[in-house]
Image 1: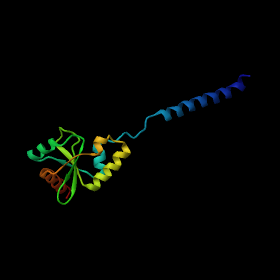
Image 2: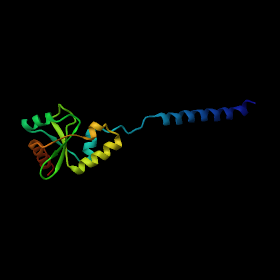
Image 3: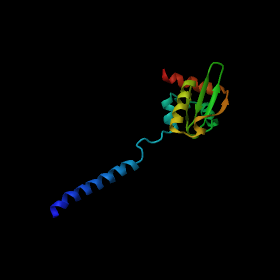
Image 4: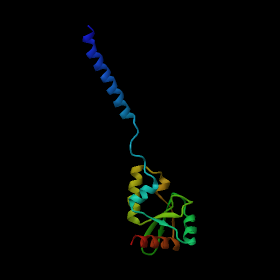
Length: 138
């Protein structure tokens, strides 16, 4: 009589263990963590720019942290983003990089303040930042 019950108990235990394992897998957090603003800017094609002069550093301090500033000059529109107010660096991108960033930020559901243009400026310093960031790549 014991022999007849042993296989059934084994199947019940196996089913219980499989159920617990499957429930654990379903409840486990996703392996992909939300991407930071820095990661998204880099993936979108923004160039990281480190201030090299006191004037550049002073200008970076005027930019709102984690918000996008659009800079328009005669020939093009550029976007500047400082992800940390205490940093000596910012990200500089063109219109194509901004559009890619918008798509990535929407996919990641990044907060609106971090994905939309905060303000618009025309600053000679921003034009110089763009020029400097492009010479580093060459």
